[in-house]
Picture 1 (cartoon, rainbow, N blue to C red):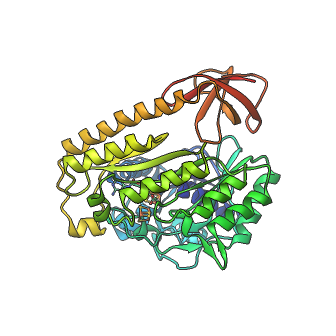
Picture 2 (cartoon, rainbow, N blue to C red):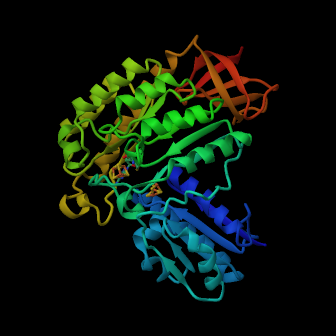
Length: 433
Ligand code: SAH
Ligand code: SF4
Ligand code: F3S
């Protein structure tokens, strides 16, 4: 058996892809190793979404190359950065294999040829590939929560975003293979699955919409928790919300990236909704699912963003009171509409200052949201021991909030009931009931 080591960067879709890659390679005489020193093959499954993601990977390629110079080892770059940079990566002479997200079935053949000294590249994107019938080899530490990819690619054209270029056109995986995978997870020790796509609400396989898929999966594995990500504000339907309301095992959490609170920016970003539409969707979520957490993504300092635009983002955050947020400053990506048409003209000091203001506000909002939970009881899925103490466990409630409590009797995969006694901005401090 040859040993393969893979580092995964970027979003959950990449984690799911790495699990597919391990599965494909395991059929061809490879086994996974966690040690880079003993690996015959070293690969990184990469992300291109922001420049700093790519810079980190460039640093890793240098590290991998140290190994490559002292012994016989094959180095591969996979995923979004492979797709975006193509030959440029091979031309560094530091990498043997470059494989885009739709070419993983060819990896065994590519690795074989590369081991004989022939550099390999395959960055062809597909309109059909969904790796539907491949059973992933899970890589999560606790064996409790699994990712299931339900679609690939993206057909939106948000002007700042590189994903449509790196992942290609949107395609949905057939629903039966998704249900089969969910059932496989439930017969193992898995207690939670997350259905993944860049825009899950546009899932469509014949007459199975995303709302139908959610209901089918929730009913096929009734003892499992179901999560999903990512929802797009313009597409999330009432049917999805009522399906959630009808199925208690679908978690009360919606990740609804807003990107900006300013209509002028949203239009320039080519997001297909307005601030008013977004706020109306939030109202609808709260009407149908009163206990649902809402989290978001935001970009500070997009092209031509003014202080007024930025104020609108802050006011939208206050108005919604997000439970949590992923916050970034704008990073121009080559080839995107924004890079071709707009100037990246907000100075870096202004971008970082605006980002810090958003982060400071969100920290207060997260704390406020957590304070409201003091005294409430939640069902929590145990993920493992807490980071701080061996005598404390941690796990998430349905709203995806991290809970910790003193407990030595339970283990990862158990479900327990806790009461919230106190909180920080990031964690609910609980006691076991
Ligand atoms: N499909 C998801 C987002 C995928 S990318 C959606 O539409 O919501 C994850 C997040 O990265 C985005 O929501 C956005 O906030 C951020 N992002 C994407 N491109 C970016 C860029 N060029 N600069 C900074 N942040 C970016
Ligand atoms: Fe990028 Fe927009 Fe697609 Fe999300 S919906 S992946 S932000 S193009
Ligand atoms: Fe990054 Fe590709 Fe995901 S660019 S965010 S790894 S789809």
